[in-house]
Length: 256
Image (cartoon, rainbow, N blue to C red; front, side):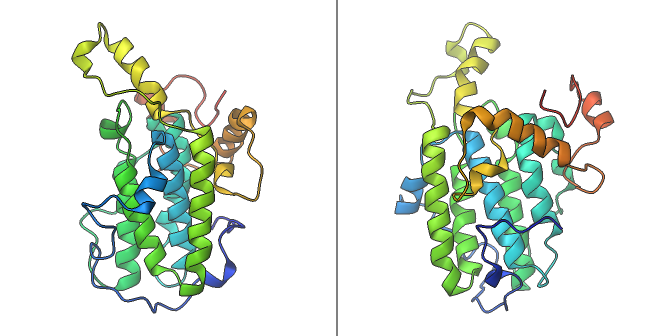
């Protein structure tokens, strides 16, 4: 078990399951509305949304601790930061198979949050892409807020607002229109256009509003995160041999 982040209140850990629950898909955000939350989350890089998703997994994991299996949520949170460095770190096939069940509530909620974030970490959809997984994070935020004890919902909302504001400053989406792949002379030029929309990999420190984050420390912080990961105990992480078999060059679990 990882250490509980300071921004997650101890009072939510393993709190009784007293939230209403109608099913895995019944407590997401509105599908066809531009809400204040959607506006707040908008215009960020792909890696910004993956970072927010990692934070949502932490909130869900600690809230549901001792109520259902949550190890996969916290492992997935750690793995999303490695995924941002290189998709070959990530083993999507390790995620529990099948559609999240509607009952019991704790298991249903845990699996639904996890499924949303695994969907966000689909490299075929969101790596070389102009578009970002804002929908997955939007729905995940709605779901996490719903399962929190009422006194913690404001704390969660303040955290989400503060981290979103930080990401607006350090990981904005470029202000440029969509272009089709066919308008580029080479695939390399197309990928170069998309790279700023994906953004640079971000470290877990970004998620703690109480700690100053300096962009110049980004690579050192990522190095430290990668070095502490144990692929043997995290189902979502590839082994070094698996990564090399997929063409990874360099030393796995080292940024530099």
